[in-house]
Length: 129
Image 1 (cartoon, rainbow, N blue to C red):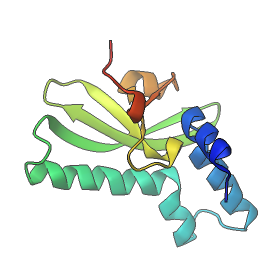
Image 2: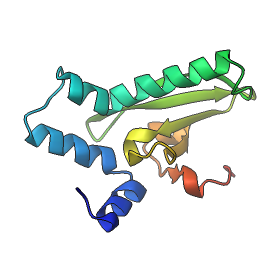
Image 3: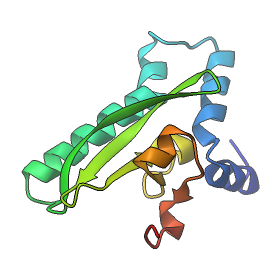
Image 4: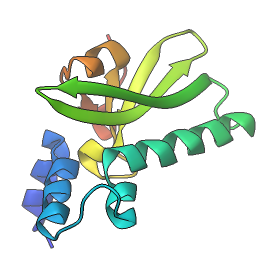
């Protein structure tokens, strides 16, 4: 169990998921292990974009047009997150793997996320300029 300070630093540095992945790998878990697969970025993106699509169909997110996952390779590291397109055609990425906090994903404009430009935690988000 992490102490609160370490957890806070990992959440706001967006390294929480990477550190957890490394810890699981040290325990001998890798791709193909169900527990590993559902907790890495691919599994998180799959669950979150499906939940968003369901909410769109139920009329609960009228401002969102669609959602999917999005993939990037930065410094040789593959990463997946949740992409949304708004009704105004703006595109954003919600990265729950970065923070491992359901109510505090890292948020980026899609073009910024693709180049790994700094994201902002949802709890601090007040809109893009």
